[in-house]
Image (cartoon, rainbow over all chains, first blue to last red; front, side, top):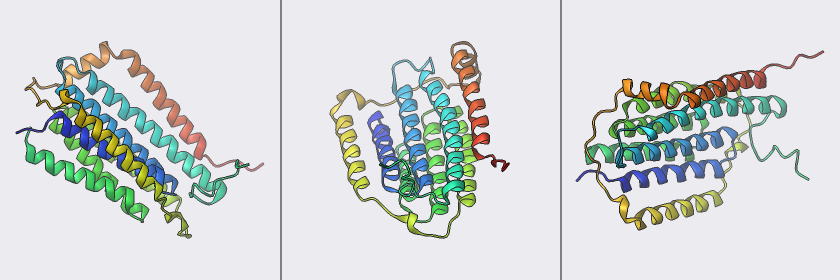
Length: 104
Length: 161
């Protein structure tokens, strides 16, 4: 018995949920970025799995989307971490609960 | 595609991801994130997309993880109250996970095994990238340049007049 598409999708769903857990429940800005990266990686896994199990593997569409997604995730991580450093310089904290200047 | 390899990689990836989400020390979480990313790259190798697996290792393990560790070291702080944990996040994540699994298990056409395919060579990927995806490729190049400049401007020291 070889792994089916279902198993890959379930692993990907678990990874997405763990990323969501990290993004929703941690108070540290870097943890939120880690969670977002995990969710993006789970989406990439879905793209490649659907390509591999799909009827037309001769045109590598899923692989291409995964490559572009990785590049965009890298840009997102760079800008996000630069924002964390800029916020830390101003407020001396990376706790997202303390960044409530715009709260009415 | 062997089942044993799949199970081992799945356990490794999910354990690394859970540790990255739940460990209290930030630096430990970043190192566990590296394990999860290596596991995802192993999944890509298992699925026959070796090039994407290599890109995953280069970009995530090589660049993003190092960037995260650098940021942790640059924003180290003494107060420990950033360790707080919001328990309602667990409920939401569990609800999302059970919803996704329910939908996946309800769909009958997903329980298919992989057909043998011819190997996807880097030459083929290069051809497709340079012919069919030339405009997205240029757009990604522009985006990466803009992100590089934006990141530099964000972290530059402000000049005091």
